[in-house]
Length: 390
Image 1 (spheres, one colour):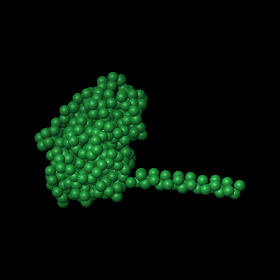
Image 2 (cartoon, rainbow, N blue to C red; image 1 turned 90 degrees about the vertical axis):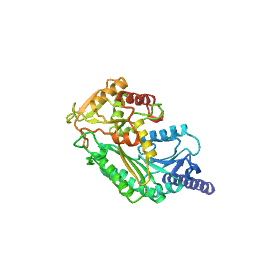
Image 3 (cartoon, one colour; image 1 turned 30 degrees about the vertical axis):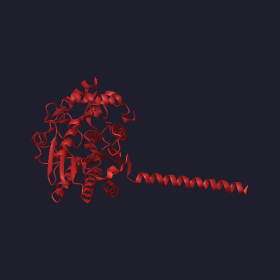
């Protein structure tokens, strides 16, 4: 009996040790930056090849940027902690461009300074396209500290890593929210920046960090302040798939599609007493394909020691009611609409003057029909009822 009892105890002890070892290994893998599709090509500069680090490259806008950059023969490293991004989008991109040295994914948080430093140490980046950010106005008013940390502090860490490792080109994804609610329309790049919500304030602070540092360095900087993004890849490869818990905070297009699919009972329009033609907010809706084209053109025009700041919009505004009418037409569903009180931090009317980017970067918005952009996005939604889990 003693022998059998000791044997059972020994087996139990071995199981405990094995379980502890597996657990330790798991936490080690989660803690360290994890790369998928890694290659020594990523650690070396190569003549004729531009290696771009795309932060937030698993997100809605970032993934579309990666797709376009890969199409244009850039070498890409995606850095994302998947808090808002989607691994399904990364898998689509990897399937489209499986060749060694084209695309790698690194799982890491921009707020982890040690991890970010190691990523820069192990890779030979030529440029950074910085999308990673939490980006909901309503959420920012409820969780301001989260936004200052995620946007402002993380951008500071990123710029410090670029400076330390000699990466001299930055394309920064900013927002029209930095302008707040200007007295005059349309908004130009010289319109005073007076943000009225933590999201816009955090983005402006990040811009200030970048601009102040650029005065002491030879960094090439392009800051793109863009407006309300809609649409998806015209070929149906990528789309917008927000996490279920974020649906209330998300873009109006996502809410329209959720209502059309019956995921939510109807659409909630917040605010009908603004000083606009129909009482609802007026926004400048920019198709994601046009937006990414602007980023690629900004990268191509970036020059050492120079700073470019550009609005990216269509130059015209559409009201929320007009947007909903377009969404009803695009989906073919008579979406139920509820009118509610204003959302904190919102502003009445915002649309751009894109003259500067038209003239200096030869960029013009091409996909300016709301119904067409929404129809393209709706096709992806119908084919991906569970997002990328399909």
